[in-house]
Image (cartoon, rainbow, N blue to C red; front, side):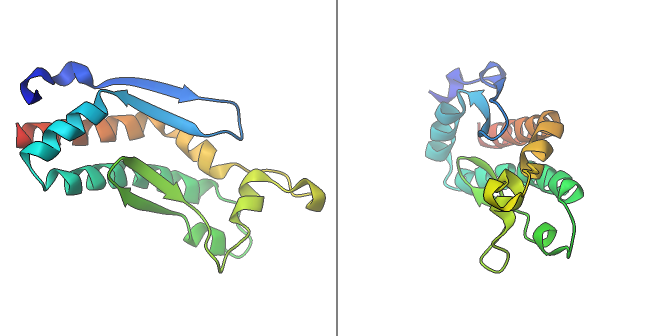
Length: 144
């Protein structure tokens, strides 16, 4: 199975819906590649987490540049997470509960949306895809 997977499997498809909806970057065949590599090496799971984390850090840097600043607390909560299935970026926590209203807006309170996370992902999508692709290719070369 693993020998049938090659560089062609990394065909990038970028799908972005209207503002206010999720942004997804899909890499066709990634699930098949991950399954093949996990069978070869248990450490591949950690490699996938690190690859997604490094790609997410690109968005984090851009989001910190775009986030509106009053006290600076919201910007300090923007962080990347390590997940096996890709990359994840979040903002806010219980001590900074206003991340959602700032990002998505709150009409009743006259808070206009400022989708800094979506904008960051849009602005750096090519860099994120290139980083993730490079990491996946390195994992492939180390394990096959």
